[in-house]
Length: 206
Image 1 (spheres, rainbow, N blue to C red):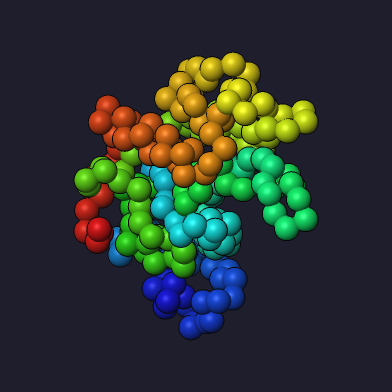
Image 2 (image 1 turned 45 degrees about the vertical axis):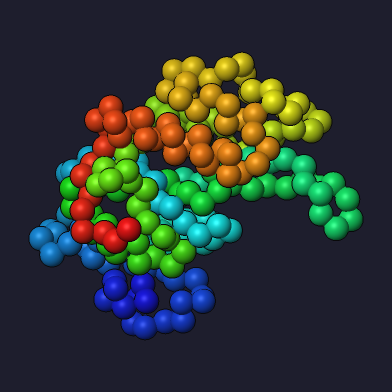
């Protein structure tokens, strides 16, 4: 259980887990970590965790409760549910959560022990590092309506074709189906890893 992995009292994993910030930071930094109250000098970077579908929010909440900054961009679109068409909110990239960590001192295996997390997104042994400008661009998209009144017509990109740091994500906002949007994200991150924007991560299964 994640509570045991972090050295906390055993708890029911079906209940929300709140991990003290200092404890979580100390455990995830590994055996050579400094006093958790001392400032961390290593620069933080954004990475992506692959999660079980429909558990993205829980993963983000668990990590936030442990003192980690996460980002789970959302979108709105109309889905047919019992009672007719409704405007629903769902992850822009189903199955993925962004997390802000210090890559050189983080214990990656403990991140993978968070309930709902399947793996650190990587290609081979390379975990792509998401540039801050791309994160800021995605924050601009957070909550975007992909269709419907006041939103986008099907297939119509917001604010014209993406440019700058979001150029690699062109076509995301034209996709109604979540798996298609997630595929485009993975391909963009694969290109980042090939270009050298990545951290070597070893010792993880899969």
